Length: 267
Image (cartoon, rainbow, N blue to C red; front, side):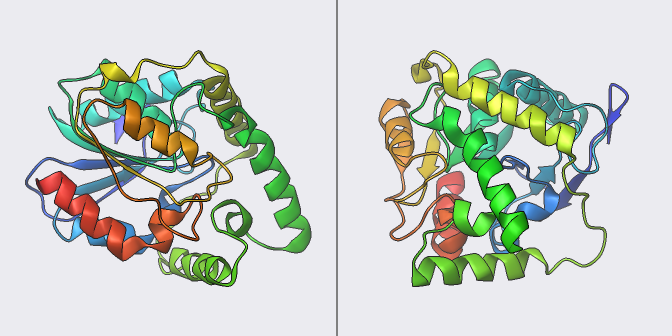
C-alpha cells in the first residue's frame, strides 16, 4: 500500500465485512512480533489489519521521532485503505499512538483496546528506552531474546510463557517482515522518551469505549499506568491485571484476552 509515495507493509486477515480492527505494535516490533494466537483468535470473527509504521520493517520512508507523527502516519494509512471508521488495538508504544489517534480523530475511531501501555507523562515511561537498550545488549551477550526479560516475569510460569511465545513467533516461515533497523529503533526510542516526559495528557478527551489490559508486574510500562488509564478514561473497562505476568500479559493469557477483546468489540 503506497501512501503519499511511502510504501506501508501490512497484512489483512479474517472476514472482509464489519468495522476493521487495526493493530499497532510495540517498540521495535514488526509484523511478525504479534502473537499468532492473538491475531488469529481475533481474526476468527473480525477483520484484522497489522501494518508497519513508516520506516519500520518492510515499510518505506524514515521513522518519525514523535508519537504524534507516528499517529498521523497511521491515520493516512487507514484512510488510504478507504475506511471511514475503525477500531484500534495498541500494544505498548502502539497504545501511545492509539491514544493520539482516538483523541484527534474521534469520528474515525469507534473503540480502542490498550494493552501494556500508559498515558503521556505516565510513571516510569521515560525510562523505557534505557530498559530496552540494556535488555538488547544483555540479550546479545547471552544469546537470549530481550522479550524474555522485558515481557515476562522471572518465575517458572513466566519463563515458560516467554519460551512459548518465542516458539509461536517463529511459526510463520514465508513472507516474513524485516527486523527494525538501528536508525528506526533510535527514532522510536526518542519518541517514547518524549512521550514519557510530556505533561500528563487530559484523557477525558478520549470518549470512545476503551478496554484496558496488562500483567500485574509490567517492568517496562509499570502496571500502575494501566490502572491510571482505566481510571481516567471516561468510558473504560479494565481487565483484572493478569497474575504472574508482565508487559506480555496478553500473550501469556492469550485465550482469555482474545475472548474478552472480542466480547468488548462486539458488545
